[in-house]
Image (cartoon, rainbow, N blue to C red; front, top):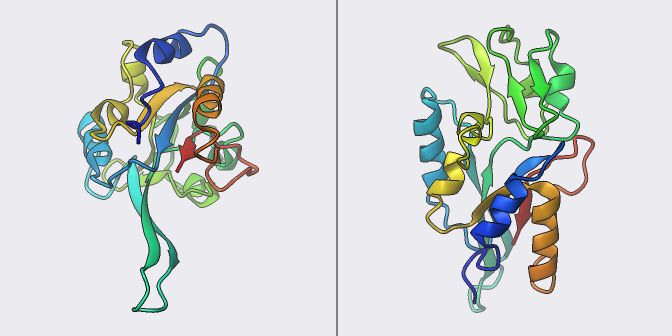
Length: 208
């Protein structure tokens, strides 16, 4: 079995990041190799200095299959699914914000919360189908994953991508990543946005 993402070279990623014009940056997660170590969660907390209870990146466990007969081999499996912000094409959080504190950048598709405008009403959290925006009780504002825009501006990748010990996370432009995945792994994996097509058009990609 090949190493996770072995077919995606650093040159491919850099070419995707350097692409000119409006684009949608995103993260692709290869669930086949995710070991659920939560290194991405810890790296995110350290990078963004989030308080206890506020995690921009969470990892959930999903059990699939059945185990009915103890005499037979269990047909069950656990997938670990990292859940960063989906940086949707049509963000429900942005539409729900009553003060216009949430915006989507045209140059890279990153969805951000302006903490100076946020009133902490939590409407965005209720509107988001992935439950991503979180309330910072200390600052009295909503917060979420920013794809580490402060790192992107320095030519660096998001902290979670750099930290992943299993190398299951890849960062780039969504159309380029989609094309690479389809060309190299279409025979072995299924490709799709989490939960299938939704009204919010999430950008994060998963394969398993």
